[in-house]
Length: 355
Image 1: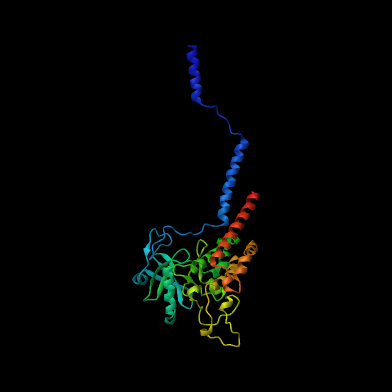
Image 2: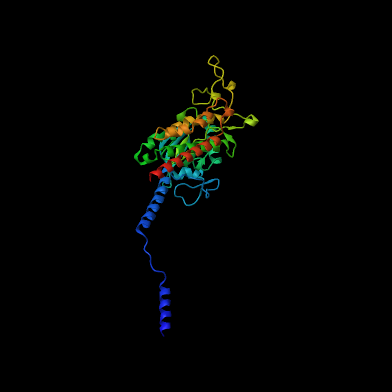
């Protein structure tokens, strides 16, 4: 009996399992601190570089669009739909080819572009063809068009063009984005668009509406998530140096330091400008302008001079007097992304040491 009782006692102790051990207070504090640091790092990552728009794997098929909170893709709006469903509100911009009106479609704000005058109709239709052919993450979303009425409907971006960047960043709601990280990311977006144009499905396209800095900035829109999209595609000539197909941006003489040297009249002031004598050029004119556009985008915030220092070599190459010696847009993009990653990681390491 005594032996049976002892066996039962051991069985009960076995069912109780191992005795409870208290976690030492010091170990618990260390675990809590480690968890807090991990959360801080994640938050800092989001502060340094905000979520960017990436290529949507569920992008609408060609001839369709989806904007805002639309759950499904819709076909491009027809002439009849533009006439009956779109309500024009007020003019928000005007260029040589188009007037742009803030409008409303199914309670959504949209941008309605109208031809300014018939003598630039070919430029208007060229821009429409480019807009239809180049739809994607780098180009403003097309919602519909009507060639008969000379109208184009696109997604509306209330922050406007890159010309408004400083004004936008001075608003209290956007001041947290006024950092070298976000500004450099805008420059990455800009060069990404050039790289896309130079290797587009249609061939190599030159961004001709870029005779000065304000004109260049006006071609790009700032989106709500602080990325950049190309908006104006009226002047995108196709070039192919190997076949001798080059371009000239307009029929008037270009002046100033912003345009590339090969865009300037080469025969001196004593020879009057003649369009038929002006040599043509290729996409490397876009590369020459990158440093000036990027300098504007970087501004003069803390850290921007450090970014300029790291970009000095690639920018010097962009300013080569010989077009063939300038890097490609993809080369510049690679350099920008390398600098962005390098400075972001070094800044993050310094922040973590402070923690």
